Length: 323
Ligand code: AMP
Ligand code: MG
Image: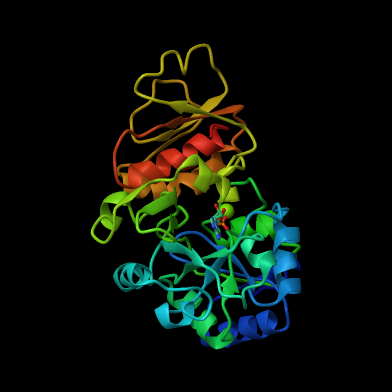
């Protein structure tokens, strides 16, 4: 910490054992702590404390009917907050800690505010040592949506959290840039056939090792309010470059580009990713960088590939305002 730091910057701390203990104390008293996970940064609060949960919705400007993910450290802990079916237990054993959120029937102890009034609850154990240590020190589940203003790209760096909601958080644990870069896969496991409510790094193909998994029905989508809202959007227009799209670049002057293919000449700035993993990792930080480069338009390559490609297409479609 140096003396030229602003009060807001002074909220960022390295995730040492001592600082994680301080963070747990803040959370115990009902405060908000942003923490790193392997996907994106989460905005943590005691999920069992309705007032603390209320602060999350206020800080993010998040609609009250959009439920939160409860972060736990293991399957045993999950069973305190949800009805863990044998299939769910198998999923947890295979993919936890990791980027898979599982929606199950909720136990009564989970406040309705945390689950958007639903009878289900979403649970995940994150694969980040600081996050797991924080959850263990707290002894209660952490409600943890992405630590951005609602509708903005998710934060993959502590500075993104500071820029979006720095005034509302009590502390930010800085774990460096997050590895995966897109949010967890959300799978509804309340029925034997899994419904993928949000694609992520645990892909449909990977889930198929344990259970049949498909996209969610319109009815299920209605029950996952997060799938309804415009999301992940930078402050300038984002346009998709699909294989089939003609004339995407025609007549544009102040545009910049991100993607895996080489764009035509003329971009103000270009961010190229070599692999789908790199694209997912850099997607949100590229949106945040490119919106600041003076362009009126970001053109994004829309990768036509299975696996992680599905998660990338989902975030890009929604950032471009498509459902
Ligand atoms: P975020 O908090 O930004 O990571 O988003 C969490 C996502 O999980 C949103 O799309 C929510 O709608 C979804 N979600 C959380 N809890 C539930 C639940 N009980 N049922 C269905 N979807 C859920
Ligand atoms: Mg989010």
